[in-house]
Image 1 (cartoon, helix red, strand yellow):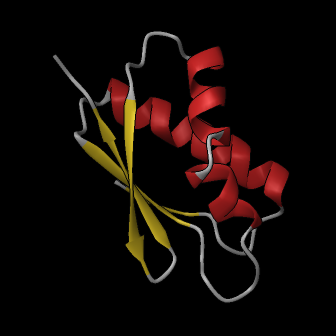
Image 2: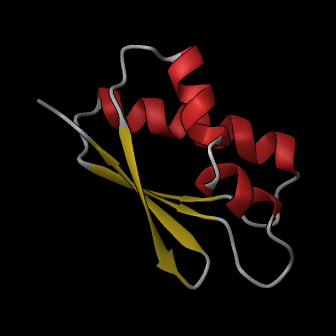
Length: 84
């Protein structure tokens, strides 16, 4: 699954990323790629990679286990689900 967030206001990017992660989890996807861009600021990237997304997912969707984040470079982050 691939979700384009770049160019969105931060509040919309947060909501879209949270919903997309939950949808990917419920669809039994192993990963989701969040495209946040890399040239026009780092607010969305910082939210995803520096604890904001994980914190929100833990609070809103406690059934989703730990997430593993990997910076793919060139403006995207891979979110991997730790399934048992």
